[in-house]
Length: 383
Image (cartoon, rainbow, N blue to C red; front, side):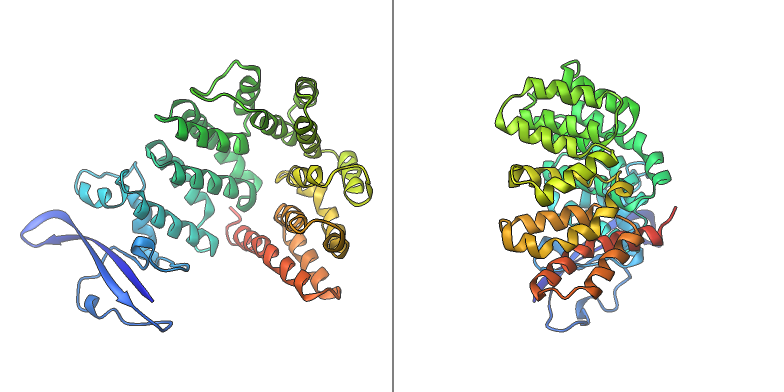
């Protein structure tokens, strides 16, 4: 396999007390699990080694601990850069985002294998987002921030970070220099807003009191905002849902209203919806698909975990009678909507006790990998 290794060093000579940047790319080709990089042998140890410069290879390329620490420092705007600005420019060039995206991905992989605390990643991402100009990377970072807040962090840590996250994303939503960045931030804000001040901004967006410059809310944007308020249990959510129902009489509007209501943090509503999922002859399949993730909202695991085994038990019938993509949506919502060791144990017990066809087993194992990862991270970093 052909690839390139990136080496970055902050070097200093005896005659010159100032640090200088040495950036080198070494082309390599390997066909074994481990191999020596002959051209690097004997040279001073670099501050950072990244084994997939240019994204030529396919795989997960973890940083070593020293490189992970140094890479994180390159993205921290609070650290002094005046002594050696070129070393920061080597990864922060806003006109060439690939290297920046790749290194952020390597830092994220460190979180994924439970070697780095997820809180640290979010704090660093929130520091750097005000300087980010690449829409794709801003979108990716927003999704990662949401994943950490909603899956990897325990409640106390999430609540301590929520005000900062809401503030940074809201500012980017309203003040980012391009419409694309403002739209990306709006999508993230719709997902993560949690504090009373942020939820008031959600309501102001729906009421037209707050406007994202250049963005006209589409019906789905409005329903996503409504659904977010419903899932968070906002005191005004029920009235806002009713008002939006009266406002949007379209067929799509009825579907989105059904999905939004599924996110209500109510045991009675959960029971009604799950019964409809299994037995209703009138609820259309795409309505159910649209409602699965709101039903399994990240903040309602106490309400939804009792349905996990029931959802797994229904897989053979789903495979036989539902459309081909429904099964994946069903599994993704019910398994990935959980974050506890108890839910993980329920999936494992179901796999051990059920005689199911190999295809279903593989699908459950594939989807449950994300739950296994979530439980591992939460156990490793209880905070």
